[in-house]
Amino acid sequence: MGIEKKQTRLEWRLWQHIGWALIRCLFALLLGASATAHAVEGIEIKEAHIESAEDGYKLAATFDLELNRGLEDAVTRGIPLYFTTEIELTRPRWYWLDEKTLRSTHTLRLSYNVLTRKYIISFAGGVQQTFNSLEEALFLVRRPSRWLIGGRGALKAGEVYNVSMRMALNLEYMSKPFQVNAINNSDWRLSSDRKNFSFKAEDK
Image 1 (cartoon, one colour):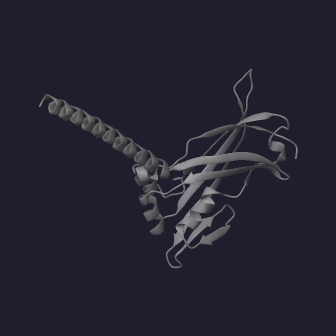
Image 2: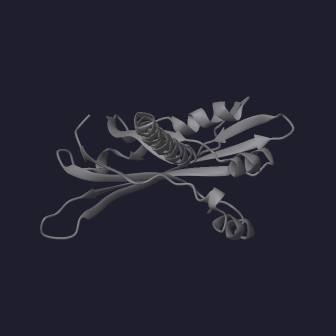
Image 3: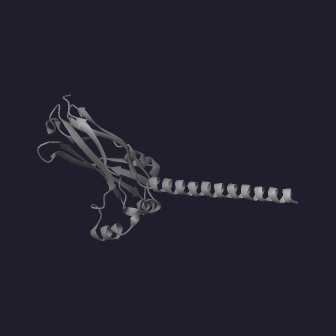
């Protein structure tokens, strides 16, 4: 009988360890799923660099961007979304505050035509591209074409500049009443963290 009781206690302790281990694994999975869901519904700058070109300096960047359900519904109801990328270059100075050398913004407009059932990406200057699906349109938002941030004379060759950039859903293009409602809605607070890096200006 004594041996049987000891065996029963050992089995009970073993099952307790197994149970706690399963609970910890389940908790870790739930945390991971929550973190993944949070990361998916947002904007992340995956890669960014500045290139020297004949006409000046251009930004090349790629983004990880997914719309939450509220924004998807807004687009399909005909409400356009504006995504603005802003970039600022400063030149460090040991004797004074950093010199703000260059600032530029670039906005893409995502809209949906209910009649043609096409998604539209609009650029500055009135240029448009149409797509059959939202995912196809978002691909262009995630991987926009290189755009000019400054002419050849904007930066001094050989100087090193600190670069700071981000992308965000821009509510300034919305009507004032809509802006008020959107500010109080977490679905519309969509923005990346700032990405910082250095760039050395060179002659092309």
